[in-house]
Image 1 (spheres, rainbow over the protein chains, first blue to last red):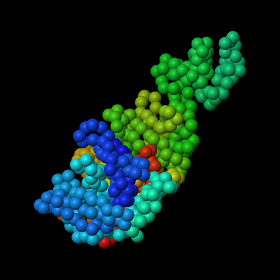
Image 2 (cartoon, helix red, strand yellow; image 1 turned 120 degrees about the vertical axis):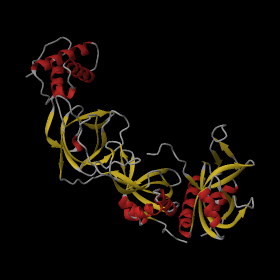
Image 3 (tube, rainbow over the protein chains, first blue to last red; image 1 turned 180 degrees about the vertical axis):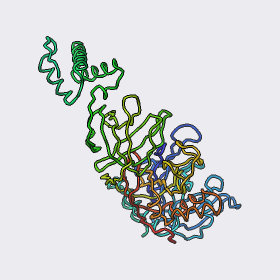
Image 4 (cartoon, helix red, strand yellow; image 1 turned 90 degrees about the vertical axis):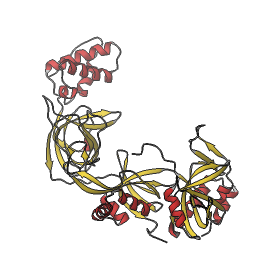
Length: 159
Length: 309
């Protein structure tokens, strides 16, 4: 059995992430896990994002730190992968040629007081993205109140 | 067999009740008298009936340096099924398959695991050094084992002491495990340590660690494939164990192929890495059985086709 409880990846749309600005830490320690307060009510330490990778940016110009922009029809989100701490994801991202369908599990981080998303794992392809979209819509609607605008907006996720 | 006692405190009715409780118990007159005396004493000091029976049996057994089970001498000589286990400290005979062998968590434990027959599963344990080796997947007749109740759950203990020794006989019987399966869906997010190509002890089937069996030390190992998948459905993450058959069903990789891969690079981890590469963020539906807290895959299918682009 697992010795610790791994945080599940909250299924979330880009538009919801765009509206989430508050990152909270579990404790005051530097390495304490970060949680993003989502408008739909939950706090996420890990998120599942899916859509189309539109560009890959080489921030340091030496390939050591890459950013990827993901668009899902409802909004846009940037995910990142550094060579040192996210090597597998970094290598995968650097092999990508946009545009590509991607599904990503990312860990919430905070950079310059802004939410940031470090890629933990990613998969290229239409099928994982289709499965992810179904779950993102369903889970988001379950989390929201019925009259929440987000409940409608999430349906903008491209199909 | 039992003498009725008249007493101010303990009424005849109560003695009869006690006799019913001890129904089937085969104690000598002397021992019975001791139990009844003890029972009366406890009752005088406001101990309730159930507790008084429990305490007086313990007291008399301890006085004679035997276990309560031996005191009760309650033997069921015919084999019973696992779902018929309903009494603490009882000698029973079982015919069951060793469904799982577990890693003992204490030095004192020699063997521990799960037995199953057509009616259910029960944990078994042995503290005896000379317990016969039990092999996962084999069926045995155990005669007798003693039942142990803790917190409402029963387990059975193999014995090997001056008074009782559990006879273990391998039998050729197949059992149908009528265990309920549950369906889990989600993305595979990780392959836990212990996934990929593993070695099992040829003598007892335990997973070898560094070529060593916890029980048999430096032994020959047999290759096997196993996955410890972490499946995440957005709300919970579960670890699911897949045997070699399920692993092949899911990944197309059989033991031989895995061995070839490991031999090519002399690195067994390459098998796990390759599988991880294929499986991460594939969406699966798994039928699992909960075996004492561990989720075991009975069937699995991919909702996403591997290698899609």
